[in-house]
Image (cartoon, rainbow, N blue to C red; front, top):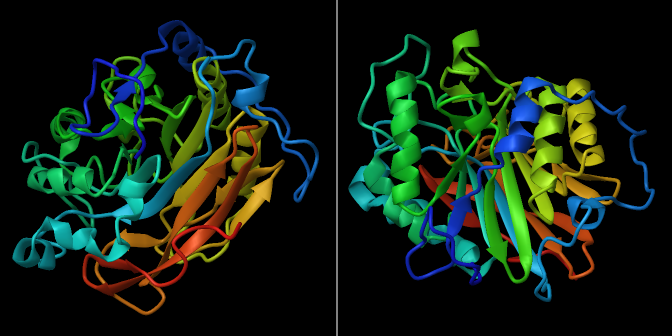
Length: 354
C-alpha cells in the first residue's frame, strides 16, 4: 500500500490512511430518486473507454498521478469454527501464502463473508458464519484495505452484529463497504488517496437471504446488488468525489463458472455510469476476467480464505487492476490455490504481464 493523504476518520497505522467520505447530497439523490439505467452496450464493445477520472467535471486530485496496482479477492472467511486451522495456526495463516502481495500494492479489496462481531443472535439459515474480531489485525497487517460486507452471510447474527462489524473493521484500519445503518450509509463508498489519485470503492450484494437484509431509509442492512438503477446512481455519485470508482459485488449462482446475462447487463451499466473496474464473487468457483469499454470485470473470484473442500473450489485468483497515469485500466487474474484450509497461495506470476 502506498502512502496517501491523511484523513481523520480511519487510520491504517504505519501505512496510508483510508476514509469513508460521506457524499450526503449526492447520495440523497442516489437513494431517494435513482437515475434511470443506461442501456448496456454490446458485448465486446471496444470504443474509447470512459471513467470517472476523465468524465468528472473538474480535476479532483491536483497532484501528479502515478501508476496504481489494485487487487481484489473473492470470499474471505475468518470464522475459526469453520476453519479450525485459523485457531491452531494463527490468523496470519490466512495470508502467508501471498508473499506480501497486498502490502506491495496500492489498494486491496476483499469480500468479508461473515459479520466481524461477537454480538447478536443467530439468524435461522443453513449456514451461519461469525468472523473473529481478533483476526482483523493480521488481515490489516497483510495489506487488506477495504472489506465488502454486502453478501449473504454478513447478517448471519442480525443487525446488532452487522453494525458492530463496521466499528470493528474501522478500528482495525479496514474500511467496510456495502452495509450501513441505513441505505444512504450502505451506498456510501470508501474513499482512499493513493499516488495522486482519489479512489472510491462501492460494495453491493445481489444474494439476499430475506428482504429485511436490505438497507432502507431507516433500516440497517446492505446495498442491493439487484437494483441496477440504484447501483448506477451510487457509481455516478461516487464519481463526483473521486477520480476512479471500483465496485465489489456479490452476485450470481453458486457453482456457476460463467456469469449470467443479468449480471453481465449490470456490470456493463456500472461501467457505462463511470465504474473503472468490477470485482465479482459468490459462486465459489473461479470465473473469467473480461473487459468492457476498456474497463476490467472479474466475474467471479471464487473462494479465497476458505476451506479446501474440492479441487474446483480450491482454484482461485487475485484480480489485479493496473491504472496508468493517463487513466487507462488493464487487468489480469493472478492464479491462486487453497493448498490447505484457510491458506491461499500464489501459484504463478505476482503481477500482470507488461
